[in-house]
Image (tube, rainbow, N blue to C red; front, side, top):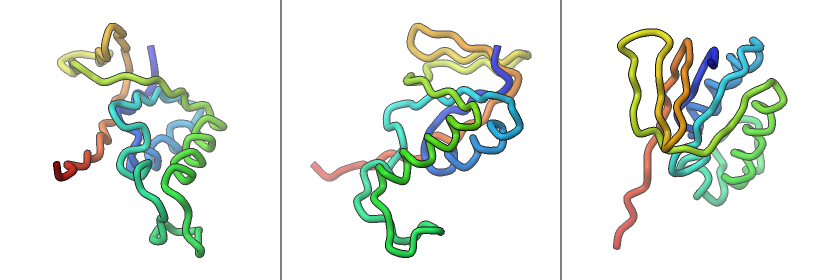
Length: 116
């Protein structure tokens, strides 16, 4: 049983996972289809605070993951198939794995729709 489970690893999820991790709640983060979200596909990011010369998207995502892991966040790959929030603990199914959690944060982000 987890205290907090976070679905998604885009920037909103990256920011949300620090608070539960720093509070020693040891959140589980399920990565989904695109670990790091669209930012992981971005080259030079110039509009993120703290990087006056910019930073590469994948490097920024990796820094966020390292910081969250430092405070106890756990990461697992898995696309969520089902969520049951009808009773506590909440039940999340990702592939063949089932997780139970006291709290659930959904920050799935967006996916690019590339021109074909």
